[in-house]
Each structure stands twice: as C-alpha cells, then as structure tokens.
Image 1: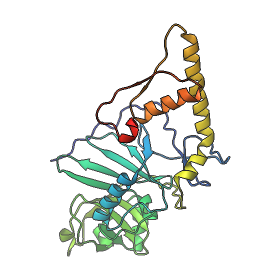
Image 2 (image 1 turned 180 degrees about the horizontal axis):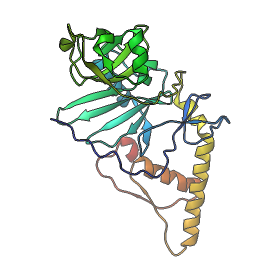
Image 3 (image 1 turned 90 degrees about the vertical axis):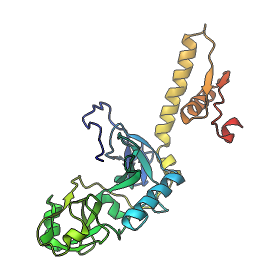
Length: 288
C-alpha cells in the first residue's frame, strides 16, 4: 500500500536555532559558541524539534542501519541528535557531526522501519549492503546530478530490491550519491541499459567527524543557557510582582518542561506551593 505523505508546504516562519561549533565539536543553540567561535547553521527539517539520542534511540538506529546496510551508524565517540519530522507516523532525522546523516521512518501499513541515508553518513560508515559501485566516468556525471544508469555500473549488491534506499559508491570507495533503486538485483543481471537509481540530490554538508561528548556540548552552550535562565528568572519575578493579589503556585508533573519551570522558580529564590498530580505513569525517581 502506498504511503501518504503530508503536504510539504506548511509555513514555518521562525528560524530553527540549531548550530554547530567545529572547534568544540558540539551542537550549539546560538550563532556564537561559549568558546568565542562563530557557529555554522545545521539544516534540519522544520519545526526543528531536536533532542539528544539516548541509549534506546542509538540502539534502534544502529540496529536498523546494520540490518539494511550491514554496519551500525553511530560511533561510540559521537553524540547523536534526533530531529522529529512531520510524517504519517514516527520519522526522525539523525544528526552526527553537525550534519543530517539519515532519517528513520516507520511505515505503519507495512509494519516496518525504513532508513533513508544521506551522503554524509558515509563519513562515519562503510556500508556492505545495498551498495552500487560505478566506474570513474559515471561517478563524475552522478556527482553533477545525473541518475545512475546501467552502462556505468560495475557492481550491484544481491540484496537490492526495487524501492530500496541505496548507497552509490565509486571504485575508490567514495560515496557519490544516495537514492532509491529502480531495478532489483535480478533485473540488473545481463542488463546493459536502464535507470538503476533515482538519486537524491541534497547540498553536500560539512561533516565534523572528531570525537565529542555531552560534557563538551554543555560547556559550549553555557553562555546561552545562562542567558535563557536569567531571562526566565526575571520573567517569573516580574509576573509575581505585578500580580500581588494572586497566590503563585508551580505545577510539577515529572516531564522536562515542568521540571525546568520548578527549577527556575527555585533559582528565583521562591519556594512556591507545588501542585503534583500522580497519573500512575510516573517514574519512581519522579515520586521520590
């Protein structure tokens, strides 16, 4: 069954504040890193709902990538970031080294996950499945935007089916494109003509492959976080001072938003009555 995709022309008027510092090898929420270096913007799909990839996320991505391309994607010495993408079901962009390296997408009608790699993924992995190799002449044309045609193909993975996402590699092992297979391996046997891959054309991003950690990311964002925190503290104090007839309270439900709000009120020097509703789904740490 064909998958319906939501319209791609939904207006997102606000910029996505997501950047990368190549000196600190870290994601940054502003144009200037705490180290003093200017950051570069990372192009992600709006609205830019980025979050850290936790162990469960990393394991899922690595398992899917290994199943479909023969190797795990996320190295142990790299932090990974997910960006939620509007789709019929769950879809996430995976960001490594300041670049989107792939997306994972769940297809509910087929009850399976699909991995959609970008060329940047080849900076971290050497795929062994779903690969197509082309000669040097064809590689040059493909880099310029041409589709993959059979006359330039030197190798096709036996596991490729029509519609599969594939890597297109040069004989030297360079990734020259990614895309979807228009022919299965069986159809390529003996074939001398035809379009084998419809390539996905994206602007080639800068990829930072140096090791990094969340500790370095916290340091890189310290100045920005301090600004946000100070503004929030002043906002809370201002609202309370302008409404002396009201009794302020703070709601805490165990989620990250309410936790941050509670911490901001404490930073403001306030010990407000806390409203907590136990939904029965709370973690033991939350109840404690």
